[in-house]
Structures are given as structure tokens and as C-alpha cells.
Image (cartoon, rainbow, N blue to C red; front, side, top):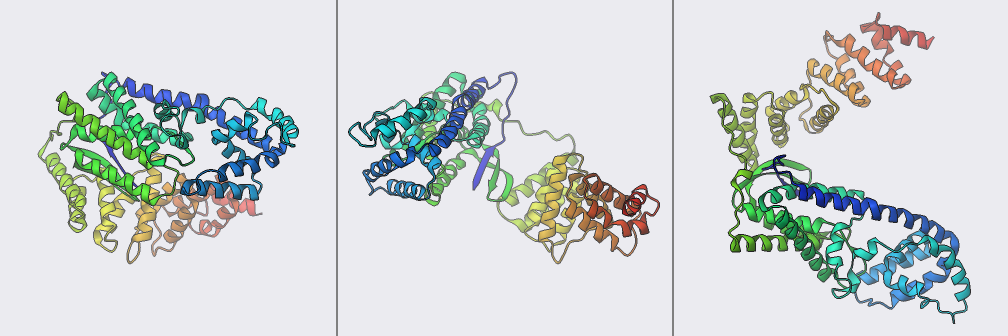
Length: 503
């Protein structure tokens, strides 16, 4: 998995990106106003269908309908095999969902062409069907989504309308986040009217490429991701060779880097083509690729014909150092980042250590050093970087979660083993108690108890741990610490309470 998001600009209240916000609102209204309620109705009707007995009359005809399609096409053959398996296992609710999506068969069924009046089962079927049909409303999603098996000539308006539909809440919210991240910058650069036109054209272009690639196969095309891919392409073409700061993630590795914007276009395209070849359905990567191609062509045409340029004021000016020490720190971070981007982790490890010495209170620098030092888990730098991270204050839940994640990474990688001072142990135990990471809090407390010299805060740490366990009603775990409390905190109130509880 690869993600790269530009971080060069931010919205401004002087010129808010109201068109981007409006597009997001339209997508949300369509989903929660029509699609989500329809999905709930379909689910309720599927339950009615499963108990109605209609499947015995309709599914054999549905199988013959699918068998009559071109079985030389792999998607059709796979679809037929899936429906046969559902029928064999009598998964009638799933069959109802599948038939609902197959509008060609459904239209013929409701028009009495599948089970005509001449069929001996027609009267029984009609009686059962009339009990279910009143609950079934006119389809919304299948009406306005792309139907891959119908081609370009039938319902061409769905090339556009499909871009405002989504498969589920996660699909919608993921697309809206990326729409905002790329959309607001382009809206500020192009103006709301031109921006909206280009967004819609990218959506239509992405749908056309998807329909061309998937034409003749079963299924529907929907989602704003093709249009958003067009925005991504327009962004990188607009800024061309200007170095833009990106946040990127490759599988489980993530970092920041400054790259010429245009470099990202072939990266985006290559990623979508690779995903199309490697994955099996679920995500329409050809729509993404189509959006990228159309977005790049549209922005290139605008910049050629209208001599459009990226507004310089959208790019933040380089920071002006307030002092020589700040300038030295900034240069140290830039050098460390360049070495990291070049994958020279050995030199980057030393460079991040220097940057951390200049900026000891900057968490992002410490995390970058720790991330690079992980390539050398036996090095002194890795243990020092871990110590700095693991002793940082954790005032809120998010900071505690980050600290816990760093601890687990250090625990897994450190060679020949972890090095945790008693000061670090007491700090981590307190953080893990607040985080309710009880296993790790108790494990570290055991380590603290085994130290040759008792830590001055050992009694406080023990009472904090046991109080937390009792507060969460983990009585058995709390009682297991009573022997240690008798030795190190015999007069503590929590010790007395446990003693009374035992008796």
C-alpha cells in the first residue's frame, strides 16, 4: 500500500474552499439521505424474501438467465459459480441481494416475462410476489450507478451520477478526506467555477475508462475516487517541478519528504496499474487511473492555452530563523531528512542524533531518529533514541498511545535486549496504568521489583498500579501484588484495604 499526501498548503478563512465543502456535503447527503436508508430496506426485504418461499420459484430461472450470458468472459463465469454456491447452501438473503443488483433479470421478472401466465407456477409465484413487492421501492443506487454490462449508450448520465455514490460509510469518508486534502488547494488556485467543472470532467473521464475496461462484466461502478484521482493529477501538474512536502506511507513505513510535485504523477499511475494487476476486485483502480490521465491532460491543456500558473502565495515562504542555533537546527533536520530520503540510513542515523541534540524537546525529530535507528537495533543510537522517546511526558490519551507503540517497537527490536533505567520504568508504568495497558504495566513493575536497589518511588508506583487494577475491578490481579505491598508499602491505605478484603 502506498499513500502520498501534499502538506504544502492549508485552507484560509479569507478565501474558504466553499465549493470543495459543497461537493463533500452533496456526497454525504446522497449517501445518508438515499443510499443508506435504501440499504436498510433491502436488508429487511432480504429477510422477508428468505422466509417467503419465492427463492424456490425464482432462483432456478435466475441461474438459467446467468447461464445464458457469455460464459467465455471470466467475470460472468465467476459470478455464475458464486450464485450456484449460494443456491447450494440456501443463502436466500444473499441471493436476493444479488438479484436486486441484476436489474436486467429483475425488470423481466417483475414484467412477468420470466414466469409468464402460461407457467404452471405463475399463480403461486404471483401471490407470493404481491406480498413482497409493496415493500420494494424503486432502486436508487442501481439506477444512478454505472452498470458495466450495459455499455456507453444506455444511461450515459451515470458516467457523472456514479461519482456521487458510495458503497459504504468507510468508502465515503475515505474519499471525502482525500477530496478535501487535494480539493481546497486547487479551488484556491483555479477559482470555484473552473474547479467544479474540472472535477466533474475528471469524474466523467474516470467513469468512461472504468466502463471501457470492465464493459460486459457484471457489477456496478460508483464512487468519487476517480474524480479525486483527477484532482491529484491536476495538483502535481500545476506545481510541476516545485518541491512540495509530502507525507508518504509505504506499507508500514511512513515519513515526510520534499519532492518535485510532477514526480508523483508516474508514481500514482504506476501504483494504480500495479494494484489492478495484483488485486482481485473490490476497488476500481481503472477508474483511479482514468481520473489521473484526464486530470493530467486537462491541467496540461489549461496551462498551455491559458498560460495558467500555480499562485506563488499558495506555497509557504521558507522559514526565517530567529537565531543562529535555530538555523543550525533547521539545517541539521534538513540534512537528516535528505539522507533518509536517499535511504542512506547509516549516515541518517548519525544526522538525526545531531538534530535531536539541537532539538531535544521536538517529538517529531525524536520519532524520526527512532524510526531510522530501527535499522540498527544493536546500536547505541537506537537505545538512546528509545530512552528519549520513552521518558517524554504523555499528558493525553493520544500521547500515551504513541508512547506505548514506541515501547512495543523497542521491546521487539532491541538487541541484545532492552535497556530501561528505573526512572524510565516508573514513568512507563504510570503511563500504562492511565492507558489501562495492564499486562505491560504489571510486567514492568515486576522488572522494577527485581532491581538491586529499591527505587525511591517504588511504593508510590506499586500503589498506583494496584489502585488502577482495583478501580477496574481486576481483584485477582490486585491481590497478587499484596506480598510486594506488605514489603514496600505496608502502611499504605491500599495495602490495608486488600488485607481487609482477604479476611
